[in-house]
Picture 1 (cartoon, one colour):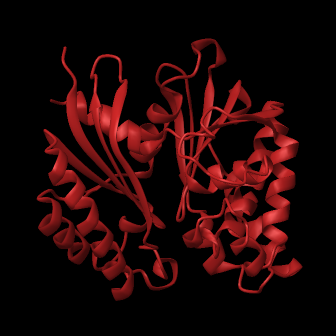
Picture 2 (picture 1 turned 45 degrees about the vertical axis):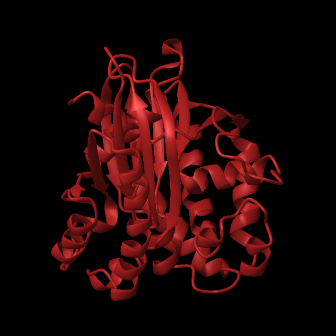
Picture 3 (picture 1 turned 180 degrees about the vertical axis):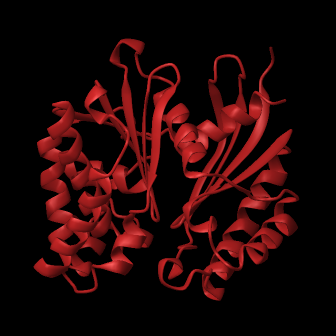
Length: 312
């Protein structure tokens, strides 16, 4: 079967990302034509107000205008726009949907946490060895964090309402965060993890995906310059990543901004991302006895593209 050209867009709490690729629907392999990411902070204030802020919509639509130009240039057979955590429960969701429709000609597909988890799992595990399963894939986003356990298929999944933007807005207000702020945020995350119904103790391989995870992996290996794909498949001792998380969490804003691997749009929230990732790593290490974590730069975006190609 020939390849199918598709465009996949993932709009989360913090970023808008685009993948245009020629995908083999049988094998799931893809030839990338475009892969872009812009920090839009769509979820700004959503945890507090329950609505998208006007300035957040403006940033998102401006980024979407640029993405739409790239999509049009490559003339894909199909386009899918997936909206995740921040878009599920807002009161002005239709305003957002109308803006997407006007720019791309498709409605945003506001997926459930479970579908988001399954798409992330498919993208993250596509090139892992079967003997390494069951895999536990953790997708650490701005508004939510997905835990997905499975092998050839997903066995269990859960979406947790903890993420880098949400935890920053709830708890981490000082520069650097105070001990009390850190303790409150950590207690919040641990309480959510403890109430989970994903049997993480069955995992043989732990995989982390999304921008916060790649940033923290870059910190753990002291990366001086980020090139897309350079961290894909990197395996590190959990202790080494925990040390990097602690360093980022305790850093001042100016110190984080000076780190070459921290995207300017993540400077304000990567401390909370570090706290969430460290909490997850400790939780999994304690229950599954794992000592290593794999970073994947393939995630929900790749899962969306493959799933879309298979519908054509």
